[in-house]
Image (cartoon, rainbow, N blue to C red; front, side, top):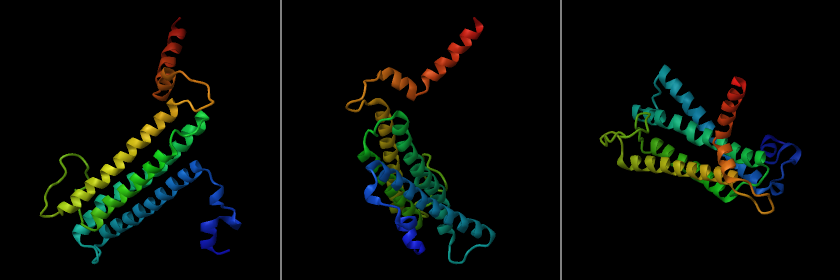
Length: 213
């Protein structure tokens, strides 16, 4: 079995996509997207290192600054967000022993983060929009250097990623709060307190009070 077949089908064809549950497919998609964007960030990082040692003739200054802008954002939003969100969408239902509130919303989260990252990466590499390493307001508006179209696409990509993040937060908290059919009803206040870590803080003070007594 050659490398491509092993990569696609697993060792000795052990990988069976049809046997996976919707939840398993969702988590695998997050991991794959995260690793792809991690590869993007690694390649960009190597290009930036080489450029600092000896400028590369094929990469003009404006292209370098576009890479400088896209590199950390692809690493954070495209790679880290995807892997961490995928991990939490698996771990929270697993630890609470109940299904994820919405697999569909999880897929929307993945799509928005994946496409959002691709859009702002394209804005940097194709239109060379480079707001010089910052997302804080006000964004640079020197359109003699940066294309207004690039700026629009850059902001659009970031907005999609942020929307995907909101969907992730909603999904996690709804998973913690809801009671699936057939499960015993749980106290909402206790669940919120546990989710925010309030009960742990209260327990610390209770222990201190007992020691003082």
